[in-house]
Length: 110
View 1: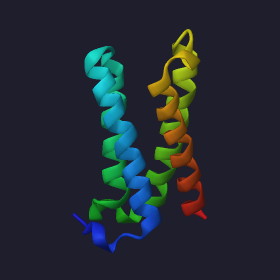
View 2 (view 1 turned 30 degrees about the vertical axis):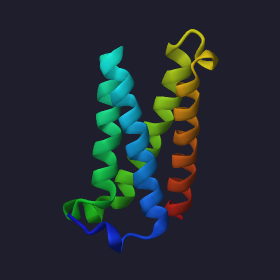
View 3 (view 1 turned 120 degrees about the vertical axis):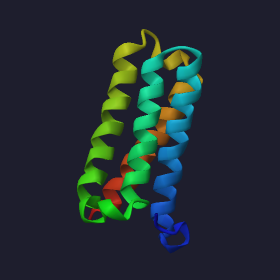
View 4 (view 1 turned 90 degrees about the vertical axis):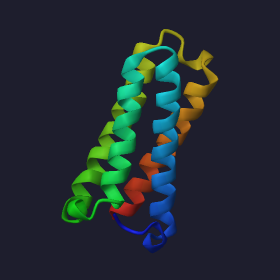
């Protein structure tokens, strides 16, 4: 594993946001819908794979794009699945975190 201290601040923010949304999905998923647990595990795995696994260093760009698409699908899925998505505060906060995550990943991909 790489040392977190060697990462730039942008990468640390991306890891933090991905882990935050992953943990929120785990927390909510264990209380209600198992699919959210799987989604949370996906965020955590992609965050680890993006920066912390030296074996994937040559694939970092591809992992970044997978995380961007994964996050976008999660946002779309939230609004498609929940009948009244605007009534769920934690869901909206999580979607805001995910939008910021996508923006940071896109900035970093340049």
